[in-house]
Length: 549
Image 1 (cartoon, rainbow, N blue to C red):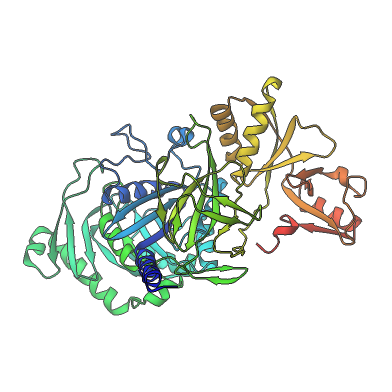
Image 2 (spheres, helix red, strand yellow; image 1 turned 180 degrees about the vertical axis):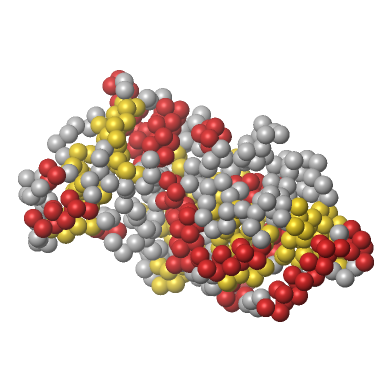
C-alpha cells in the first residue's frame, strides 16, 4: 500500500475510534405502567428530537408517545413492540430501544437486550421492584449488562428513597449508589441534590403538564439562599440524608457498575420533567460505549475495520401504505456504508444492503453511513431472519444465537372469509417472522388453519388486530387446551411421525415452520406419560438446532 492509502486508512481508523466513543446504546426496561415510555419521550424532549412531549396517559393533551407508533398501542396505552429512537446530545449519539413492559411481549424485550450495551431500569416509586422488572433484571444480570436505575413518579406519594435502596438489594441482589437525592418529603419533592457536584437543583412549578423542559435554579448545598427557599425541617433532613449517604452508603465504583454489580440510582418524575435532564447527562457520562461481541471466529472488537452486524428484530408494515418489511440490525464493528455488499449467514450469499434507514420511532430517513452501536433498518425482501449475521471483507463468521422461548398458549387460527386465504397466509407468515408468535401446522391437516403459539394471550389480540388492520383479514381464534410444547427426536435418528409415537393422541402432533415434529400437551403429567412410553424419545423445549442459544 502506498503512503496515500496508508494515510487514508489511518484517518478512517481514527474516525472509527471517535464514532465508537460517542455511541450509547441502551434499552429501557420496567414493569408495565412504571413510566418507561414516558421517560423515553422526555429524553427525546431534552435531546431536542421533539419539541413537545406526549405521554401515554396524559389527559391534558391528545398526543401519543412517539415510541408508540402502532394504532393498537395508541388505543390501549401500552407498548406492544420495541421501537428504535435516535438523537444527539452532549456530543453523544444516543440509540434508545424502548421495549414493551407487558410480560406477554417479553420475547421482543429479550431479543432487544441482545442488541444493547446497557439498560435503564425504571421503578415506580410507590410500587418498587415488580414482577416483570425481576424477570428482565435477571436477563440483564446473566448478560452482565450495566444497569442504571431511575425511580419514577416522585410527584406522587411513594416509598421512602432509603426503603427503595433496601428493596433493590433484598429483592434483586444488587447494591445501589444514589447519584442524586430527592429534596423534600413524600409526594412534595422540590428538587434533587447532585452528589457529584454537591449542588441542589430546585425546580419551578410545572405549568406545561410536562410537555416542555422544566425551569430550575441551582444552589450550593451550604448556600444560605437554599436554606431560605426550603422549610427548615426539609433543609435539615437533606443535610442529614447527605451525611448518612456519604458515611454509610456504597462507594462509587465504575468497574462494579460496568459488570452489573452496582447500579447508579436516580430519582425523578418523567411526567413532570423532574430530574430527567440530570439523569440523561449522568447516564451519558457513565454508560459504556459499544462492547465486543462473541462470534464463531472469536471476540469481534468494535474497532475492527471490517463491518459486521446482526439482525435482532423484524418488523412488518411500519408504513402500512407500502406494506414494507424492515430488518433491524445492530452494528458490531466497522463502518456501515449504503449499498455495501456483505456475507449473509442464513443464505451464505453476498447481499446488497440497500435503503438503510435510521429512526425516530416510525419516522425515518435514509442514511449513507453508520457506526458500531448504531441501529439501522434495512429493507427486507424476505431474506432476513432474527439472529442472522452480516459481515464483510471475506469474513464468514456467526454471532452467538439468540435465545428461543417455548410457547405456552395456543390457538387455532383461520380466516373467516376463505376468499381471503392468500392475504391470510401472507399476513400470518410475515408476522411470524417478526418472532412474536410461533406457527405450527397439524399433522394431516390442510393449510386452511394454523396453530399459533405465544408466551402470552395478549399476543393473540395483537395478531387479530394487525391481520385485520394491515392485511384486511378477519380471523377466527379457537383456544387450545395445551400449555406445553416439546420438539421431538428419536435417539437413533429415525423420523418421528404420529404413527411412530405411542400416545400421540394424548396431545396434538404438529410441525413447525422448518417441518420439525412438535407435540403439544396439556401439562407436565401428560408429558411424563409420553416419556415413559417412548423411552428412546428425546424431548426438547426449543428446536434441537437451537439448544445452545
